[in-house]
Length: 123
Image (cartoon, rainbow, N blue to C red):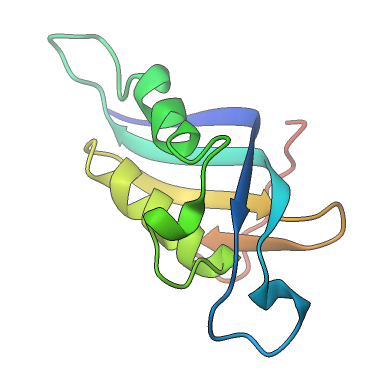
């Protein structure tokens, strides 16, 4: 049986710099990354009764919390950070179907397995 699980209001604070960027983001700076919704899909593990352990997913995002992201990703744009997280989450045996993360209060990146798919974080 296929299930969808949603995690809401995930956030971390971290520093980075964009070495290949021509602008102020080339210098060391930080963000409060905020993910209003992360939705994964997968089969329930009969041994654990879970699709995925929420704590393991949160641990993947928290890997960068109060850290320097360039120690993990050479060019840590928001797109590259999300790609890193999605790859790690999917290694837990689930498929990420929707993930939105804000780098600032006004700028976010959205990953969706369907181009026109929208989710409301409050749902």
